[in-house]
Length: 210
Image 1 (tube, rainbow, N blue to C red):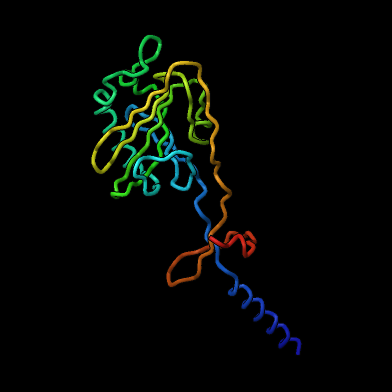
Image 2 (tube, rainbow, N blue to C red; image 1 turned 60 degrees about the horizontal axis):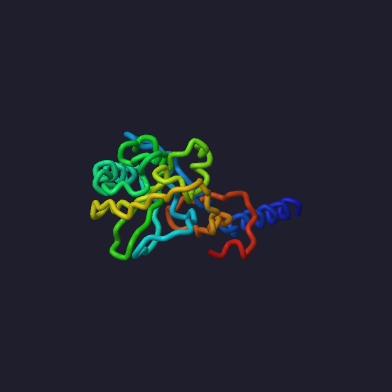
């Protein structure tokens, strides 16, 4: 009788374990450190919310290291022409294309309605911006002239365009409108050879909706 009861309990426990929904963690990194010839910065994941858009935007994507290298190759090849008017770069304001290695970078990937992959590059020459701050979130500013700029690089058409340089005046760090939301693990069903693992976190039915 005892053996039968024990076997029944073990059977129920096993059934309960198999009945549990498998959970696969979602990637939680927000940015990745990248470095190459004449550039250093952080590339942001496609799920990291930004409070700006580009023209004809269709979505976001996460740039690969190869994408970053290609974007920088195009930028450094064409920045002289794109920046030929030297807007907001006179007097005490540096000329961007003469000091490219001085600017720390932030990279955000977009896709447009034609299917092109576009990388928005944020250039920052600011001793007050630490490595940790650069990796933490997109930095947008007002003032500071040629020490702050951003530009777009279309990897499919090889076009470098939309250079915007800050105006004169004192530096003002602009508050972010959107903030990254909380991350939760997304539910996955066991399907064939798909590898899944449990997080050990108990999720409510509401949390499992995505």
